[in-house]
Image (cartoon, rainbow, N blue to C red; front, side, top):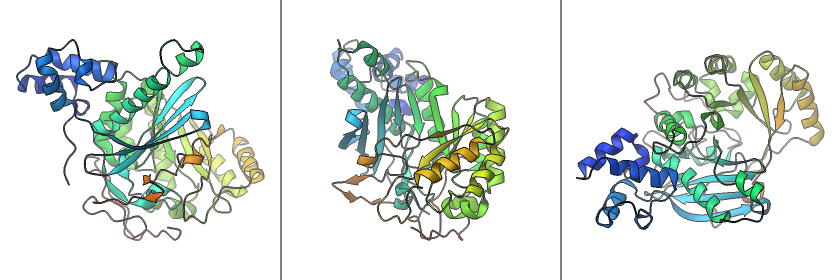
Length: 405
């Protein structure tokens, strides 16, 4: 499997300067290139008028290769939600979603092509894992989102207040395709690139970045030690091991108590409230006793519940809970003093909502052409290889079963 071409966003600023020097140019050219990419969101040599014409194309060709090729864009919510399908250099497909709200713009990014976690209610999980994305491939999704914003908000808008809120991507959620902490090294590097000030990075606040995980306990501990202020989102989906073993196969390796203990440690170290993600599924995890158990497990901790009405995916026999059941579930959790929000089902019409990203072209699901060595499609009994740079992170045992795959 070929590696993505080296890109400026893969490198820290000092490394970019060395790379430029190795190409026979003065080191400050790296800062100029970085300001164009991270400050002006361009990789076109024609835009780089502060560089000598004789070196623009050569430097851009070496350090700003095009990483994402647009395959398709879909919009809904009157244009406020845009799903983008990208083809990578090796043919792998990933999706990202840009969402405009009155006071912010959120970009949902993918960290892997496909996913090896095998959660049976998630379209991405059923596709299996193709490979990890590089740091630059992750960052490029946000830069592309920023370009889309610029195109849709030209100068001199009729509504200046709305234009101000939508001038740039303000929030990043690692909730697209893939398990972020299974691509630990590249995801953390991408977070730094996204949040370091220009020209080192895009200058987005760390407090506006959310990294989700199904519960890779050692990696959560490692993330807590990074000195970052990002929000941790734990995809719990059931408060009991029996239910979570079925919904989140990695629970067979790290049980609910271990996952929550790691989450509370993260909150204690960072001072950041943990988001507990819970996809509410009719007659599967929406029982009153599960709501009470969830509330009791979270009570007194720095956490809130992000309740997600299950979004439909092809071939799934599961559906969202009935409205009355959802309201009762919320009431019971809140009764324990735990705050609950119900996720906005943005993008459902274009399969861009939570759990629906599956990278399809013209209505046909595109399976991975090549898989990471040791990986198998979700549902075949073993989870894909995790990032070996995350100490202590090992795949779940081979007893994983996915009855609803």
